[in-house]
Each structure stands twice: as C-alpha cells, then as structure tokens.
Image 1 (tube, rainbow, N blue to C red):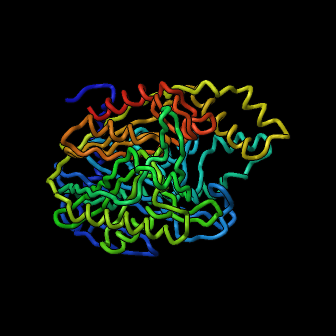
Image 2: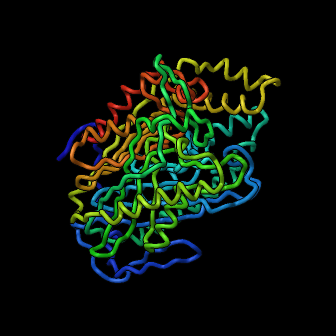
Image 3: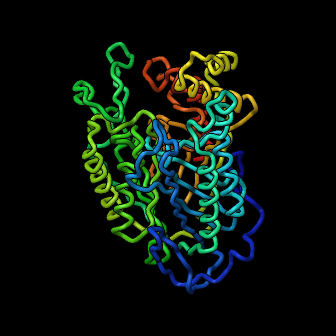
Length: 473
C-alpha cells in the first residue's frame, strides 16, 4: 500500500448502489444538455466508472459579472465535469465558465458537490475557466462589502446559490448514471498563434511591457511569444469503443474582447462547444497555469477576432483527438493524491489599512473592492485556511489542480517531475490569493506581482513547488 502525507485512501468500499447493473450507452441531447444513461452490461470490480454533468450557469440580465452588469447573453455559461467512481470514495472534477470562485464561495461549491456525490470535500475540485465576462463567486468578499454598504454590487447571491444547487443536483444524477471506463485516451497537439507571455522583460531584468489579453501596441505585438506551453492536451474516457467524455487542457487567459457586460464563454468555450457538437461527446475545458499568459500578441480585441482564436483552438482540439491513443485501464490504475498548504501572505496585507480604505467615504468603489478582496484572503489565512493542491492519476496520465492565477512556470515544472508521462494542469481553483507568481517575478515588477494583484509573498514558489512534487510523486 502507498503511504505518504499526500496520499489519502478511504477504507470505505463503494456503497452497494454503485454496483448497479450498467446498461448499453445512449447519449441524449435535451435542452442543449447531454444526459448519459445506462441500459445494459454488468459492472465488475476491476472497472472504473465516470459520470458526466453539464449545467447552465448563465447569470440573468442585470446580474453583476466581472466588470459590469450583464447586458446581453452572447452565449451560455456552463459548469461541466465528471464524477469518478472507483473502489475509493468518489472524486469530482468541475470546470465553470466564471471568472473566479474563492474563499467561502469555494467552500460552498465543494461542500454541495461533495454531498451530492457522497464523498468528502477534499476529493472535490472546482476550477473556473476564468472568462472575464463571467461571474465572480466569493461569499467572504460579499459579506465584507455588505458590511460597508456595497452589498450586491459585485455578486447576485441568490443566483449564485441557485447555480450551486443546480450543479449539485446534476452531480448526483451523474453519479447514478455513471458508465464503466475500460480505456483511457491521450493525445496532444500544438496550438498555433494563441498564447503569448504577457511579461516582456527588458535588458535591466525588469518588466518592460505588459502584454494584456487584447493589445494594439506595436512593441507588444512584435515581441516574441516568450515562455509558454504550446501544447493542448486531450484526455478521453472510453467504455470499449464508446467515448464517454473528453477533457481538454490549455494554458492561456481565455479572453478576446470583454468588459462591457456581454456574457460569453469566449474563445475556449466556443471551441469546446463546437467540438462537442461535431463529435456528440461531452467536452470539458480546463484553463492551465496561464496567470502570465494571454492571447495579446495575436489579439487586437476586435469582436471578429474571437472566432479566429476559437478556430485555432478548435483545430488543436481536433488534432489532439485524432492523435489519441487508447490504453486499457482498471481501478488499480487510479489514485487520488492531495496536499493542503498555507500560502505565505504578502506583507502589504495589513488589516488596519484595508479596513480604513473600506471605511473612507472618499475611496472609490474599485478601491474598496480590492480592499475587500485582500481583507477576505488575509482573514481566511489568519484563521488557518489552507488551499488544496491535488492530482488524479490514471496510469501515466496525471490531472493536476492548482490554486489561483498560477504562472506557467509551475505547469512546466510539474511536467518535469514526471518525465515520459503526461501531466495536465488546471489552475484557477481557489481564486482568493489572486496571482501566484514565481519568486523572481516579485522583483521584476509588472502587474501580476503588484500589491493589487497578488496576495501572496515570494516565498510562495517554494511552498507550491513542494506541494506539486508531493502530489505527483
């Protein structure tokens, strides 16, 4: 038996209801949502099961989104994921088309999904794709804003809690309709002319240019792509010759044009949904460690360019699917690893100063929102709150989950830990800490490592790399 602080294995066997007869697959499309049902073959103890859930989590018109109130719905936002059943407690992997879910927002999501799946919260991960015309969910921040007369400005809590319950109901149904998994597929393809590093370093070793998600600055456009991970990774679950679900992982900020309240899943959601429609198989997209990665070199922010970027990403999804190689898999090939760590606080988080800013009638609403974000993370950390770093292993494929707006260097480092294997990284889980930079980045300047953007100190690199190593070894 494996041992170690990062490996948690439940002694509780699957409940008897998980050994129900599994029936031949039928895939129905009802109201735009896939529903997988069982209709025939028996499940055996050497087979995994996977259930799929897809739920609409589009906010109503007038509800707050990232930078404005929702004024139109360009396309729907979804919460998508899988429930993994093995000889241990279930595991839930969820991806949401929102900008961020943090603090007590994360607690609410994980607790509700864990209850629905019949598992513990440390076996549930909830990521966002991080679209900037999506919803923010942080009940800690909302309670602080409410205390200072700004309640409801950034959150529609009625909608948020309703969305969580809808997803939880879908998770419960997905568990009941889970299908046997006999094979795991893996393929990858390079994405061309999408990702670029947003931090352009000058000769003095400092950030010279910040390349935002959309840019018309000629110097930013002309600069090299910089450090990125150009590979899109495609993982698929199969019941013999029937594909059950496809998971895609790629690292970049997911925005083209945004900020006016026109709700959209943006170019990753468009590419994902097109592939889903073409193949008739549920597709789930996870944003990798793209804290310092944007499409800025290739995106001028024009509305038409959204579909150009979507086409490039869709092309890579298709190529990765076509290159997929299937491998037989059983429950003995599956493991769940997790580590809980406390991220070191940035020295600029001082409660008295944050409270003063919130109390100052001369402070504008944006300044107060930043103060509330920082105060929420400060208090949570001081109360002993830890973040999860976890991985799901399927043979030689690892699905790694990281908190915050993590830099690409962490994703690349994770891949080096398992040479010759496949590490697929999803970031944007716990959104509370903001940007999680590398140690050197905090001395280079730039937006990401600024006091406004990051709530953690340079010591975060050592802590996070140790946790990543823990869950991958």
